[in-house]
Length: 248
Ligand code: 16G
Image 1 (cartoon, helix red, strand yellow):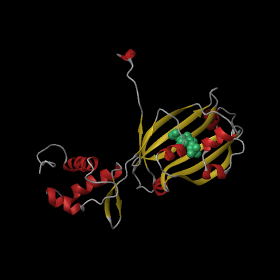
Image 2 (image 1 turned 30 degrees about the horizontal axis):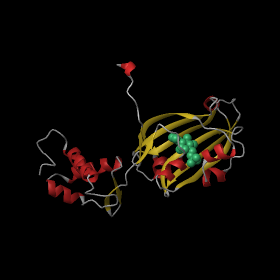
Image 3 (image 1 turned 90 degrees about the vertical axis):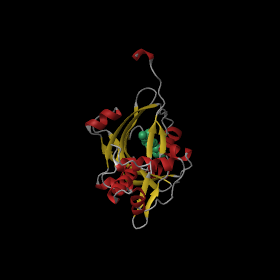
Image 4 (image 1 turned 180 degrees about the horizontal axis):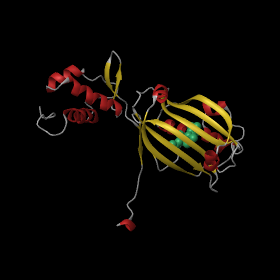
């Protein structure tokens, strides 16, 4: 069997991972399909079950597979690809993919701006800020946890219902008639802690992406400051970039 080469310096679990990924890519295995049990892979390729388990675990963490206790290991849905060159709301993002957006509100409160929040939002220290924490869902499945901070002066009239039942951006643009013009985002990798793992239905230590988003109006006034935690097994980010001659 030349898919797994025991004489290769490449670790066996890694070879198996690549092999399984290949089978998913060519459609040999489709989303929702059960994978043969670890034992079967181990026997077929004459490798240890530990090696197979390691490969499966890595593929679970990378979002290619998922496990259901007592039932086995299955092929996951493809990741949601989020282009970074356009600013879209979570609601728009989901709808564009034919998924039903949803939110579970963890809290909605008004707090006095800390120095950091005042700086991010371009307001005075202690000025009122909406502090909103939502679990964002796609077809009922938790995708991200979003902590949103907004100047309460700027986003007057915002309610729990609006941020739970509909879209924050829609309210800002359609009701408040403000223009969200651009945003600056940062993306960092991290791992899920106990609380995040529970909320996002992933294992403690599973990879996540931390995204910070600061959106601005045309005149440069900040609209929102958002810290979010995205499941790395369900999301990937893409960007179209150009080669710049001046660096040659
Ligand atoms: C996106 C934005 C977030 C914004 C939210 C509004 C990124 C990384 N995040 O998740 O900043 O607050 O959309 O969503 O782009 P909504 O209009 O569905 O409430």
